[in-house]
Length: 113
Image 1 (cartoon, rainbow, N blue to C red):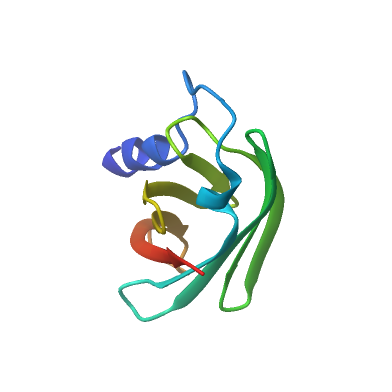
Image 2 (image 1 turned 90 degrees about the horizontal axis):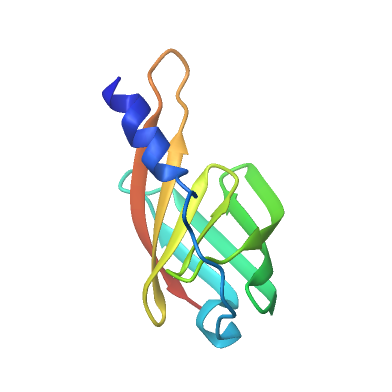
């Protein structure tokens, strides 16, 4: 049940407010590496108000979708949650699935490029 709580907190959206954001804070490609050295990139484009388009890529996984950016600087793309921690830096939490093992949440930081 502890994993259920952790996973639920990753996707919590109840009570989020959506307000227009500064496109410069989010647009671009955000790159980082997980603790195991696996690189990832989150590209954010077409920010209009609080709506945008995001693309997550890591290894052979690519996820692309329209997103809503909450007033606290967070959004979800696929199994990942993006949180702006300060201009140019974001925290990425991703649910990792491994064959025959319980899923885990990996946390990493990304820099805007």
